[in-house]
Length: 97
Image 1: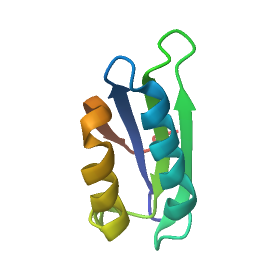
Image 2: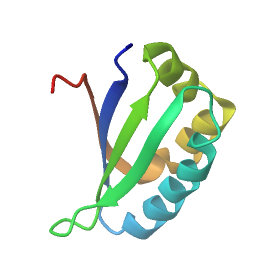
Image 3: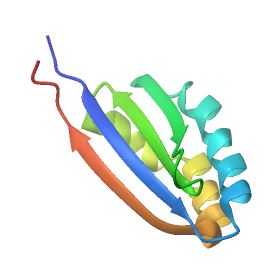
């Protein structure tokens, strides 16, 4: 069985831009669920830091993630929401148990 690619993406909003970023991120969820290689794509918000968002993503493979990151929708998101983002951290994992 081929291992899936697990991604934890943390996106932090600039102060006072949390609501704008939240709405933009929510728009990504429904789109990602239609993409080839999609397995799971969940958005979370920190209880302690309301401007910190975490995506828990599972993709069939690295190629599926690359396709996702290079779609017109992701590029449009970056152009629109980039001004609200303070930082982005992307970590990739594989399941070992």
